[in-house]
Image (cartoon, rainbow, N blue to C red; front, side, top):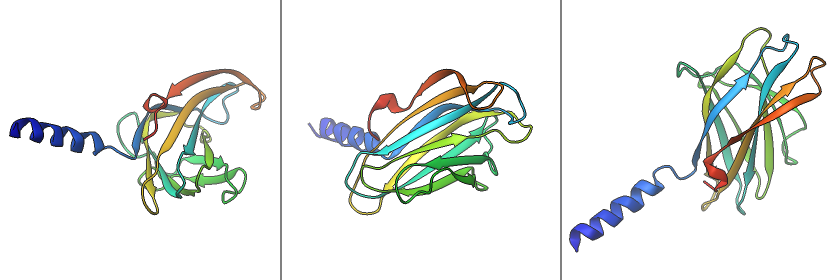
Length: 162
């Protein structure tokens, strides 16, 4: 009985070890000067009634941080439309996402560099606990840079809250 209780306790602790974090299995960011280029869109929603600090962290294909990469995001009222940001030296960008708010990130290509890799989304509630939901897509832009040719869905956490 003791071993069963210990096993259930360890299983419970292990299942909560990654609470608040989800993996972005892939992203693509092609150069802006490429006539047909692919960008990645990442949508994050706060499915709770508390504000959460949402941090996206990106890594290149060799595991190094994607630092200094151009992104833009928009969403809730505390985020100005189409805010342009750069990832920091750790490959991160963060915002405070209000209760039930949603934000969309776009990884735009740098002038001449093709980037791809993976990342994480981490949420930290300001008080209590909360849940995030997320989804991503890769969008191919046509030669004009505005129209899209296709979308490729990139599921995050199987659509489940984290």
